[in-house]
Image (cartoon, rainbow, N blue to C red; front, top):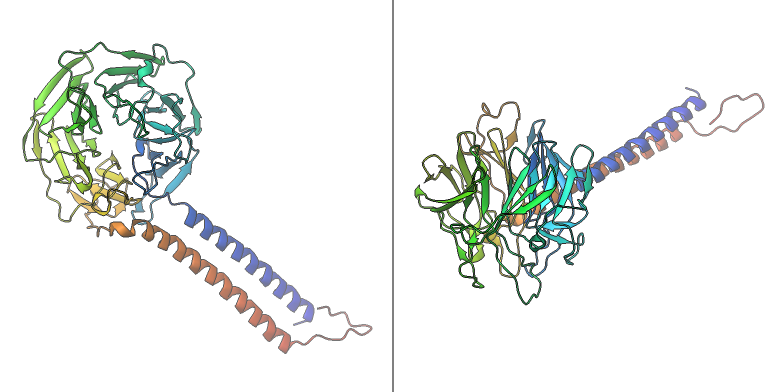
Amino acid sequence: MSSYKIFFNMNFFQNFQSFLLIIILLFSFVNCQNIPNPRYAQTSSLIGKRLYFFGGDFTTNANVSIATNEVWYLDLSSSFNTATPPWNKDVGMPIGYKLGTSCVSPIDNSVFLVGGRMYIPNTGNINLGSSPVHVFNSNISLWTTPNIINGYNSSFEKRNQIQPVIDNNGKVYIFGGTNFTGLDSSSFFYYNDMSILDTTSMTWSTLAAFTNAPPPLLTNTATLLPTGIIVYIGGFKNLNGSFMPWPVSMNEIQTFNTKNFVWSAQVAGGASIGSRIAHSAVLTQNGEIIIYGGSIWDDRTISATPYIAKLDTSSWMWSIPDLSLNSPQLCYHSAALYGDYMIIAFGQIPSKSSSSYYALSNNLYILDIKSYTWVTSFNPNQSKALPPTTIQTPSPDNNLKNYLFIGIGIGAGMVLLGVFSVVGFLLYKRKRQNQYPKSIPTPGNTDRI
């Protein structure tokens, strides 16, 4: 082989190695970055085949709040393993956000952030002048803030720890909450009014006080049944305007009829379910409300028990599913139902927290509600026929470490591969130079190095 051909081959090989190394390093960087930080008090919404998560607080200091404006979503259109979820980051919100809620319009799939604590993004500074409503168009990843809400009640401006619902006509129903923001404020209030936001006309109305309305509620769940009944479960209640709220018994179920604006109280029976706050609830197709997680009302470091329960809304009877393994412990998390899968993400870990430190999670858990078995594989096309796979619940202390080790491990492996490739090339080059020493050009010699 001529020295010119050797030079050409070696140069091509060197360029290819450099290109490959750049691709490997870029892939490693993107892979390590595309994992959301642990957080709690975020809100979430299912839009088509995407499960969105908005905001949350990712500080572990129990005495400090740092609300993020990040927006993440899971792509549920294809199969994945819970160890490597298909996380995607969308455009951020105009404000940092926590302890509010997101409602998806059934008309155009717009997301309405209602109430909540609003911060200057990623700081501990609360922006008290923010609008109580922000709108997200998921089709074009665009945030807007309504300039005018007709009939808006200004007392709602700082409302948080609420759980609104939205009906098929695009009306958002908001009950209870508090204006307490965690700041050193001389006064704050609990509310038991019912507000309605018509998202089609951006009209706000606050209903007149009901004589039979429940006391102010917060950190409870609200579930809208197909009949138009809103079911409120758990949380705090405030009695007689006292500073200290009290737990709501899980046998004390408040309901509101959105068709005739009538409150009713249901007494639930069945299994004994402990009081709780910061839990989640999803509605199944057969009319059962599955509640998950939470902590006891007066100590966020103690998990509520049992960790999972279901309420039959036709008989108002509680039952406790038989799970083969212990459930992961979470509060202030997110939960959504997609087919037969209950998808649970983020939140605080009560048993690993203290009065000054919050242990946070960014793990993803999936419960097959047909078999009440934790699974590690998500398959959108075979959710009903998916064979149950037991899940080994990771240690809460290692929630973030597991993700970091995966990213760092892949990145380190890719870098080492690139290094070995470069070293291999240098050894190859030295060997070729020994076999083909440089020639001294002479007249008539057409070979080139």
